[in-house]
Length: 292
Ligand code: ADP
Ligand code: MG
Image (tube, rainbow, N blue to C red; front, side, top):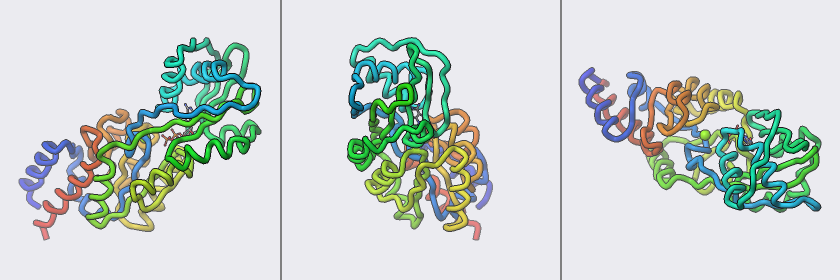
């Protein structure tokens, strides 16, 4: 491709909401064999809502939800906003808290009115020795529907199963179909639990799921997928996607995502629309065809 044709393609991409931050991106994208994508905020809106709250015997809804919302009021995770919003919608007061702590990939904890409150994934409860199996049936249905089951413990005792649902973006299915039509494999890499990840992947026709990945694990997953399939583009929006975006042959950030993700990326999808990846690969193939 001539410098002019690259300039023209870069301008065309920008018109279509695809910002090519690095010149090589256009040259590398045509060789992509696999597109790995984050789930929350990339495939989904990243704006979950609370859908289920199942209490353990002897726990009371208002007390549990307000204590959990107090802890989550200090967290920046989208799940936290869902819980705080649900508590407010029920007219609950959010109590004071102390000693807030966030354990990335696990959940959050704090002291609320003298009680130790922990909220997070099943693996966080496992660390406390709280058995989540009592909620196995309650968690199975939301999980199969692609919702995320979470658990709350109060003073080390399992108090509730909470499910949050994060809708798939209206443009996601067309993006996945477009990538498949171009002969690419699509893989999901998520910190969310396996059942939830697989349910969403099944719904969208995604080829492969790597679930329950801790933040450091996304880079390992990228390396493994690349070794298996070839050149890899990674699409993500979060702080925890930044290392994977840097590791990928081409990193693609969701424009509505965090600054750290955008700074780590070669390509930015301005409106957060994943169809931009299809556009970018198409432009790369069309432009680079001219060189050979
Ligand atoms: P992802 O962005 O893919 O969900 P994270 O590493 O941010 O990955 O989170 C992984 C899991 O850790 C979440 O699915 C959830 O189960 C749990 N978790 C993280 N933060 C919180 C929080 N503030 N409240 C409850 N659970 C949380
Ligand atoms: Mg995300």
